[in-house]
Length: 392
Image (tube, rainbow, N blue to C red; front, side, top):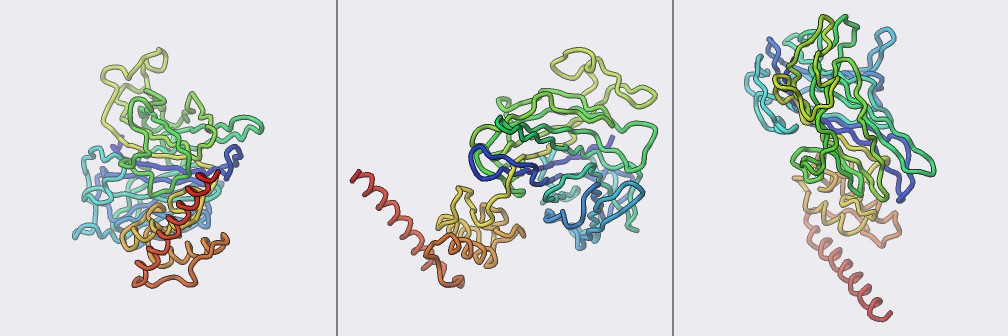
């Protein structure tokens, strides 16, 4: 089995209001991967089954000169392919074959040679299947089997009058064509937490404090994902009052136990209540996948996600100008950079909320003046609130 290191993130969003919930808003995925094929890789392809090109609104920066998004229709199957070419991270122009993978916690390949990081975001839909392939020098897939990057499919139940529920089904990926034998099986454990605000794609990195990773947040100790069979989490998530995101961290490991003639795992773990994999059946670490569930898009100009577009958000933009790449840094249009376009979005939203606002978007030379004005306004509001409390 390919020893793929992945980090995935899937986001669905909550409607404004403490108890109002809606359907799935979208899905997001981030993952690291090594080229453990027998051929040097010059490109890569992500296949999203059941997705239209217009559903794809954002991709994570990768070390390739070219990215092409195309819609495909092959018999009863259709979807979108994201194809990368022109590898530029090394002078060689390719990822060497037979690279031995080590744990990256899901995002280290953003700046590490010998492996690569990919990501994508979708709105309104989630793929019925996700497959990843390395490409050779001629742009052809290396092998017929996709890499072992498991992708969860979310199941949301609104439950009117009660607590909304959210479940996830995870299975090992299969090729688009039907084959007689099942893909490899993998071990899985799950960690879970909840927060009271929506999350952004760029936050779903393993070194972010919102990602659950300690024993107190462990939801599922061990599960064996049989190749080709989806695995529903035993306990669905009840979305808590006032929470805007359910965040999970999936960890995957190789199954190194025996298989039968149809490549189904033969393990006493499937028949007995064991606390951990049997001796000799737990192999190398494969992936750390980060996923989140919300039910409404984050406000594009509310950088600190406190429910208000105000001066504090301007200060967040100012701190992130020229170097930030997250929503919390001031990236209002989600193009992975913080610039004057993001300030214009904040300005329009700020003035649209009946604030006195700024007359025009300030030039860089006037940032200090604007910042002092904003700070003065915030201080005045604080003093006014203190006076009102004292007078009450």
